[in-house]
Image 1 (cartoon, one colour):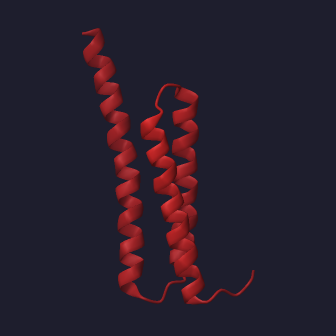
Image 2 (cartoon, rainbow, N blue to C red):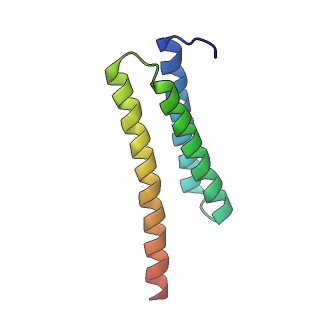
Length: 94
């Protein structure tokens, strides 16, 4: 593997995290098809996982914590969205 410096890993990690949030935003705008939502969620999880992988090389503990917290916010935001959709469907049928 190519040796990466801490600054390079920090930049890559934040870029991947920004891409993850961008894809999630597109998913919130266009939520018509289930296959599209599934693709958006999987893409967000993969980008977030890659971001966490590069975050392990960051030397600054503060930046590591920021990246990890933003990834958890992204993950739990999708979980909240998914549960909200299921409860909305359940309310419609009852």
